[in-house]
Length: 276
Image 1 (tube, rainbow, N blue to C red):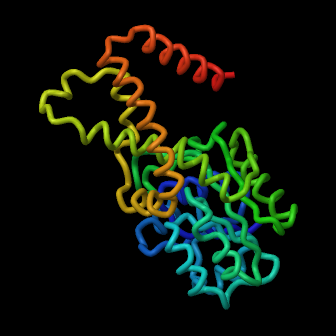
Image 2 (tube, rainbow, N blue to C red; image 1 turned 180 degrees about the horizontal axis):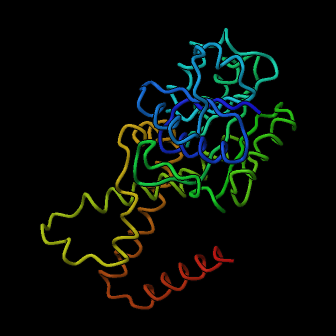
């Protein structure tokens, strides 16, 4: 199967590595020549003199590992090169804001979005590593009229890349949950780090601070776009978090140890259920 990966950064490069190892015929496109040459040297993508148009036209699957707005721009610019029978997908962390437009722009190809729940705090193809996908969650977000055959193709890619659980949900459900499990956690980490005004903090860091703030090392261009694309869901989750933080703060103000114990017991019970 011929796969074209558009955007050879951390995730795109990791897809290229993993799929090439599984026998897929992988091609790559990027705005810059350096990541293309890196992937060729690693043996992750084909070394070809074919034009961009030819590569797009020959691909069975096109994986867009680029920013949300860049996805729409790519589809608009290359719509005349798509063909019936192709599957176009993306790895983007938001869905609702663009998938309907993307589906129309991808015609006559079929568009089906997905989200690999894996990554690093580094950017660039030199940090690519397909092992980050091992046992990670893989989310597929079909529309109501998406053929089951397309879902099966992405499910097989997930298996080949050694993802763990594959879940199927609507784009709206995806954005609601990712707003909580991913975007809110990044917002908390960023706010925690930015609230520090003590130059000696580094000498007091332990595992708790290190684990909580790892994701504060963030790609500002990507994540600002993701936050804004999903701001309704994210703002709702931030407000719920603020309510819980206020409950804890008030318990401290009133020396209410019983309430603190209750909060800690509840969080422990909820978190333990996730380990099963």
